Image (cartoon, rainbow, N blue to C red):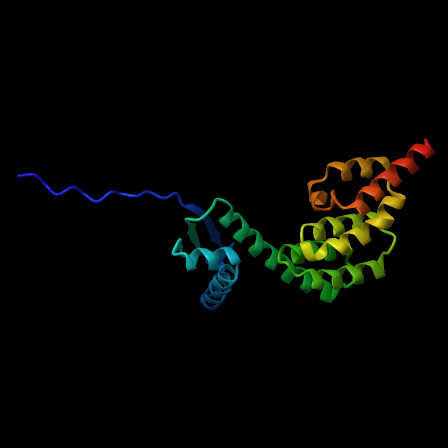
Length: 208
């Protein structure tokens, strides 16, 4: 007697993000619970989590000291989710340091980069203005701020403004780096950026 044909099995590729808490076993039970809840809130707050969940393409698995998120969307989804999580943690830590040492330019730079990743361009600008009041002539800090903001559409204008004094004083080594720096790719088609590069090249050639 012939058997019924089995339903066709469909396979999907899952892209996994593993998240855990360092030194979890050494914490008090109350601390463990609080950190796990914070971890969940951060993950749920990412765009990649919300989109995958809405499409029914997300699987969450507890691992005791963290969790695993299986995205059945794209390979980039877990990477972007992790990037946002890292950025939020960086901002939180930077705020703690700056509360004790508001003149710490290095930590301010980390915070600006993280805020740019989170899409908080206006807040990043506030941090930049604070840092420039402390050290207005630091062209490397300006350059790094511009790189952080260039990736965000809302930060493009500020990035270009930051680069004006950078290219006015830049060395040949920094100029050559700027020509190939992928962080500045969003600015390369802008005539103002092209004009700054050309002016810097002319100035450095005349100084040789």
